[in-house]
Length: 284
Length: 261
Image (tube, rainbow over all chains, first blue to last red):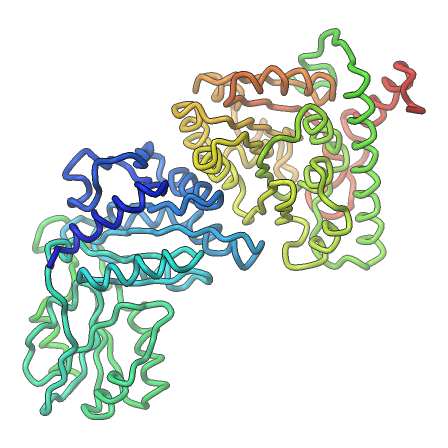
């Protein structure tokens, strides 16, 4: 099975060969963005003016080029969100003019106070945009196929820890589980194989889809824990929906409420296995 | 620097251009006065951004060429009309979801504005990049100060994109004059980026001259000193404008003996 980065690269190559565009900064500088971008026509190297670069991608989307726009660190959404969320996401509703743009926004650990971690929470609050967080090859393809079949923008919350993954990740239901873990992005890796837990993977953050498996597991265990690689606000919105639907208390664990540093002991990364286990003890 | 004659020189006054421009200027003005009347009568209960005093600028550009995708912002009724938009549809939008500030018209290639000042500039540049078509990107003397405008204009130069940047410089951000807000000139910035750039008064024949000059060497930037006759929003007025271009055009049309035509 191909890895996630190989999957992205091949889908991108096909898209560019059909006349699509990929816009990003420093595409070829170091490793072609984690090996996710092919060396072919259709790549537009942007200047380092972030806000205007995002606006340029939106303009290309408006005229039908269905661009892939790559944000190398999700924290740069603090720049890029202005045109992406206030124009592209609203265009179809405001003016009936589709603005389909595939936003690949890449999270990573240890990248400091702005660039570290996922930032999909700031996107989830805005109308008109879908938010999807894949970790496996098939999941990434699901997001890509959604884009090909629709004329709306979609925010793909990628994580660099997914790029070398070459397998699918199944939900795990255990007879003696005491808590249901609902995990997002790279938190899914930390949450693997924890004793006495059900583990359900979440990819669609917005719209968030409550599945029968989520209902079943939460009713069975009587406790839920949403684990996210972003700060806890986005997880709280998901927990809120799950609690309304099931009546089961659902807790949240995400990045700590502090600024990340660069050194390992000062980082504020995706919840570790140890933090998850500690939180489970607290919940129970 | 602001004057009704900035950059003026003796120009040949093309008959067809003069008639088309004057006809459209009057139509734009009539529309805006009607909007103002409805607003003052309490029949329009949305914010309105009138182009009175500036209504001849798009009329002049459109009389040179209508071959543009158009990205403007909140004071754009006269762009909508000058490039061939339907006045009834425009009024429906003003009263509806888009309001006066976010009008659009697919039939003439005019895209809506989100409300973030100046964001139409990078989007316009992206539209030129993606389509290869000629693009008209309009902003004001305030929105041109948004930092992302410089980045987008610079990128248009780097990629040699066919964008005509127009700044309708009425000297006011709400009521704060340019001199209070900045010490630099956008024309100097545009010039240093390496594009054709001029700072001129809002004489329509002069505008037409520089639009024609620009079309052969896009991207280009034209800063047009003009006078907003009404408040930023609504119909209020703070007295007589520095100059009344409508009256000056009317006088010139009489001199040219073109009034009846």
